[in-house]
Length: 435
Image (tube, rainbow, N blue to C red; front, side):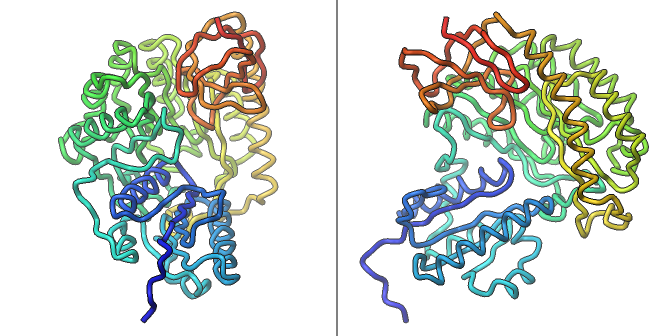
């Protein structure tokens, strides 16, 4: 039997993948800390003895990054710099047995819903009274707020339902309580996340309840920005927009992944919507909330995609002029219905198409940014780098969108809001001065 040394364990959590994974890591951190176990995120000091890698298994590139990270940590363990390596998250959930055979030096593997089992490795208890409490991995002025887990959609390319299961909403009371707790920690902006935001409430309230949730959250004192991520376009509940228009602390921002614009591709992806219906929805959104920032995500190289489909997508972008666009190349994921299709487009060609599509968006983004010159925006300061402050407007989310770069001799407080006049505009960033 191993004798416990006098030196206490210190756990470093490495999080890969999406913001939903980050919330899982933060909740795990909160549980460990409540059990008086030292815990840090992405520790640079290297004074920890245990690592937990929270993996992503969504697409091939994310899987490779997760496996490489696990192997790096195992190597540190083998060289005596770590005592234990644990792995959790989506990749582990999906390929646990195969990975355990391939990488035997990992001490234990866990799925996405096995937080209590991870705690048992530390002889720690899962504390139910910690509902929503967590140790933030983000700067303390913003946080992600997960309102549901899993997904009932059947998009042919997506493995998330295989990993996360069916849609399960948190109650409005639980989410409001969590938001209040975050504000007490210093959070001013919350980004609402879910696999599918607009489906919220159907399982427990028997109707879509996102508008009701938003109304409750806007009443949380001290919550200055509420941002919506990952809204599904099919059967989009337009009453969300009424709340957004009426409540000042809901950012005029909507992240709505569309994936493609060619009807043939939308059918193959099982998106349950046509290009024409998407165009009508986008028109209605902009009519209801003038000035709204629309972000979307696209997929290049889905099986059967032709160059004509790519051209149609480019024309769609030129017509709709989204404020923000992200793009992925198609990843052939076993267990999905698209896995039955012939993934015949070479990776290099997928990348070429993605680049070509983003070049169209780059020009649009530049033109839209030019219109912001000399305008004054309320900017939240996120950090200071190389002597300059970096912030965001309500039209920009963390990491994926524009940043506002501010040069000033004055001291600005991180996590505070300032009025900034835009003096320069580039493809994806802005520069400004305090007014």
